[in-house]
Length: 154
Ligand SMILES: [Zn+2]
Image (cartoon, rainbow, N blue to C red; front, side):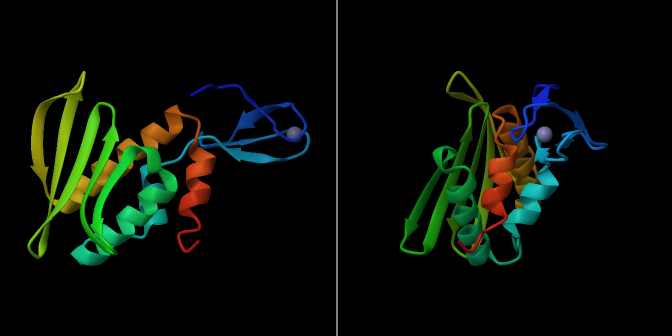
């Protein structure tokens, strides 16, 4: 992430706010969010981990809005069977198995899985949102992703 952020309204250099996520222009007071947190992604998705059907459907919807090029979703109509999120070095997979969802994380090096871990859904989801935040921030897409997740009903 660059530490110099230019105001897209007047072109002045913006100054970072206390949390480093938001920059403000000292002249026209325009604010830009330059970084997103895992907590914000999780809040935007409003996921219910206890309900497998709702979890898979909501996660698929949020990924299609904020991370479409990174997510592969296998579904029969609205019934989501599996979701795979490819973030280069991290691959997150969740698959329906009967009434449960099995969540896995693969550590990837040059397209080969070094190791695969099966994780509890809450642990998996927390690792996923952290990786998605890092991905959005390193691609200067924080504001865009926030906007997408902020309007999940669209
Ligand atoms: Zn400005």
